Length: 415
Image 1 (tube, rainbow, N blue to C red):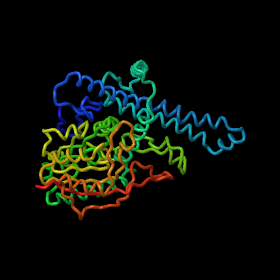
Image 2: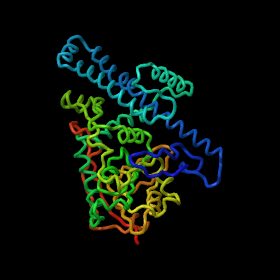
Image 3: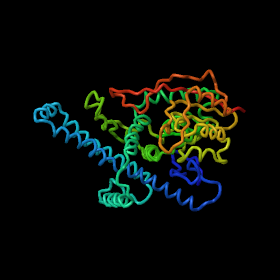
Image 4: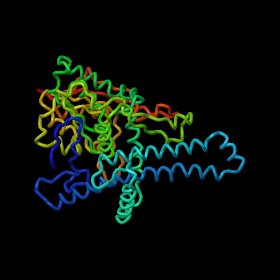
């Protein structure tokens, strides 16, 4: 596998997303061509599963969400149906159907930019895409993969909400809650260095999602690399970072699927425009590099060529994605220069807790803070904050709001 290189606004797509032959999806040290072939095949399958999820969006949502609701209203008594109809409820559902189709066009463009293979341009009217799509579905049927898992469709819907969080004006308050304290801590750490002189300071953002935090860090003059494992996030970040020509170029309807805890129809049907800023208009492009790497954090940054390379690591809603957080901490320790700083903010929603077939080590906040010191990091007690209330990809107009009481810590690798 090639290692990610730093290049402005681009994604280096490398590293396995399939299950490897070695434990934890990582390579064994000996050269094993069968293993590599298996891993490549697993990665190709994982990629196609994600492409299939995006391509299934319209059918899945219309059949499972829109038409079912129209059918349920149709089954009411005539009197009840007339009352519901008089409220505009049927019109609302039919409007939602149109917006689902608009979302689908957006998702097709998104997949087209990143899809590997012969996918024709979906916006071309020649009919090539329809023919390709038919063949794609048929090949999935032959492989016994006719149904997209609910969990995958949830990731498609989550991706639409991630666009709101990271790249819309509506997401600004959520970004300020979460990214704000991180940016303040990073600025304080390097306060004596002017932004135009920070290009030599290398900041790593694992679990970068759609890349906004990494982008914002780069806008302060730092050279920054985001790392992401999820193909859903990689497709979406590649699209927004590399296919945005004007502010608010793309319109999506991320809340059209929510039919519960809705105050008004206009809340549910509202449009969100992205991006709120242009990713290719960063202020310090002559001095600061911005890049994204694709693949497993431990695979990439635990490697010898990343040893003591980074001046700062910023983790936001990331540490709880580990099967074993000690493996993350060891990888960070290896990748950080002596004297480097680590800034962390997030909850402890351990992602593999009670997931069948997955190992998982779940720690309390208190245990987590102790384990950081045991690995060798020096925690800055003055900068430890224990109850920062934040939301995550929340529909700001929903009648139900989830709040995380996150914690923030700043630690350093000793000189």
